Every structure is written in C-alpha cells, then in structure tokens.
Length: 392
Image 1 (cartoon, helix red, strand yellow):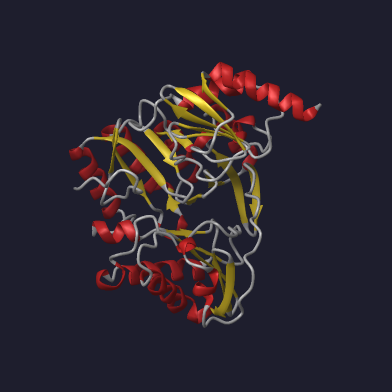
Image 2: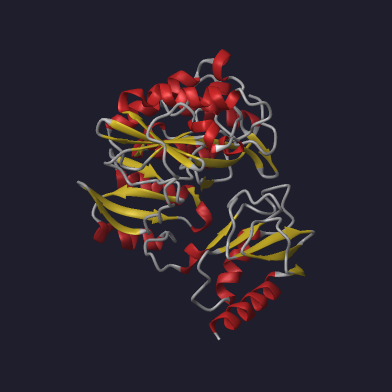
C-alpha cells in the first residue's frame, strides 16, 4: 500500500501520511452505508487506528491513525464489504457524491459513472481531487458547488451544474455528456479543476445553457421528514466524531441505511423522539441553534504536521469565550494557510502561523490578516470587540 502525496485526498487504496498516522477515506457507494458496515468499520478503526472518524465535505468517512499493516487490513475490509474498489488508482478517481435519500436512478448513474472512470487509458490523468455530484428530485437537494461536474436528474431531463453555468440534456444522455466534459477538461494543459476553464468552453455545443443556480442552504440538524423517510439529521462539531459515537449510530440504524452528507452530518433512520436524547448524550448536534455549528476547525496540531496550533481544543475554548450570537458566515480555525476544512471564506478565519493565529475578516485561510500573533484568548477578545462594534 502506497501513501498518497500530501495535499491529495486520501482513499482506501492510497492512504495519506499525517502526523498521527495514515488516513484512509471510505466513499459510500451510492451515498449510503448499512448500519452493519458502519459498525464493522468502527470496530476496525478502534483496533487499528486512533478511533477518530471525520465526516468530510464530500460526504465521506475518514479514518485516522493507522500503521501500515493496520491500514492494509482496513482497506481489505472495506473492499470485502463492497465499500471500495480493489484497484487503488481507480478507487482514488471514484469521487462521486450522491445526494442523501436520492432514488435508484441517481445511484444507477453513479454506478455507471464509477464504471466508466475505471478506463485507465481515458481517465488515468484525471486529478485526484476532481469530483462529481449526482442528485435527483427525490433526495435532499445539493445545489451547486459540490463537484466539478454535478448532475440533477428530473424525469426525462438532466441538468448539468458546472462552474458558472448549467446545461440541459436528456436524462439518458447524462452519462455521455458528463464524460465528454471530462474529456474536454483533460484536453486543457495544466488544468487542475473544472473551474479553471471558461464557462463558454465547457458549454460549447450543449443545449439549454443558462446561468449557474444560487447556492442552497444545507438542511439543519434535528428531526427530519423527507418523502417517506423519517429520522434525525445528526451533526458533528467540526465534522469529527469517534468510534463510540459511530457504533451507536450503527446500532440505531440496524439493518437500515445511514446517509453521510456533505454538510458534515449523517441521516439516521428511526423515531426522532426516541433517538434525540441518546444522540445528545453522545455529544452530537441535534438542533439548528447549536452554537457549535458556527465554528469549524481542521484536525490541527498534533494530528497534522502542517499545523502549528491545536485548532480543535482552541475551537472549544473559543465557544466558551464568545457570547452568542456568533457571526453569520461562521468562524473557521485553520492550522495552516491551506484551509483544508473550509476552503471558502468565512466571516472570521483564524489561521495558524508559528504557534499563534492570524485573524482574517471575510476571507479564506492565508488571506491578508487584520491582526497577527494572537493566542486563542486574544483572538476571542478581538472577535468580541469586532462583533460589538458591528452591533452598535
């Protein structure tokens, strides 16, 4: 098993080396996992990893802290349970998000797309972070921004959501249209993501071209009813959980499906009135007003060698120090200037720099700061002053 270069997204076939061991990522086929599969993965993570499980912005489960042998065994388990492909490089390209609660048509398209991407001669040069998203009119809507190429199925038509534009094709033509866009992308030297291409280049020759839709607000944690599905959308502070929590989620699901989401939550089927007290005792987020939703932090020190600050303990400290309401747009704590946990801008970003924080307003990690060299208490004081001045 070969560890991926730092900065790539890890996968089952190519784990990533971090300061706390190897990281492996499980990409739920069809956007869902059986409770039994989650329980098996959690037990393997407890035995071979450090017991921490991240939910990523692609709806994947990320397992940390493995040695080489334990990582090999974990990968074999995932493949044996049908959760990953045995070919490491092909599995690395299988970055396909399916909307939570989507129907059979969306999952069938995702499976066909995964099969097509296995063509090494045609798609072997696809960058490791290139991603797809598929939704339909049955599942929770994703909206734009969840993949380089996104597709929304609706009856006999399919809308392709691209950076800066949309195009409409027949539903039966969705797969060849998506693959043709990949070919078009691969023909551009040096392009790393689809957004590197002008929208006019992407939509040339396509019909039904229009502007990109507006982003959608994600569903809030808490009891959820959608179509015939009933359960709870369960959030994880900063997207990180542990094997104890995931074991309980798997037991609550039983033989049913768990749906990891790109909003760092998971949909758990069952009676909400019964489950919410159990989930609250586990320290999970079950209400839209939970202040922990306003703060996101990466792994930070000591788990990540690139980080110079302990972002997650500092995030908890920040929540203790700040009075609500927290700023709309959120607070992002990044261990370094890469901003892995939240690549976009936030209302306030604290970027680790030589053991202290730089404070950025309305920007991304690594953007020019308005203050530098802050410890977390000093950062909290400055954020409080800024918020009070805006309310005055």
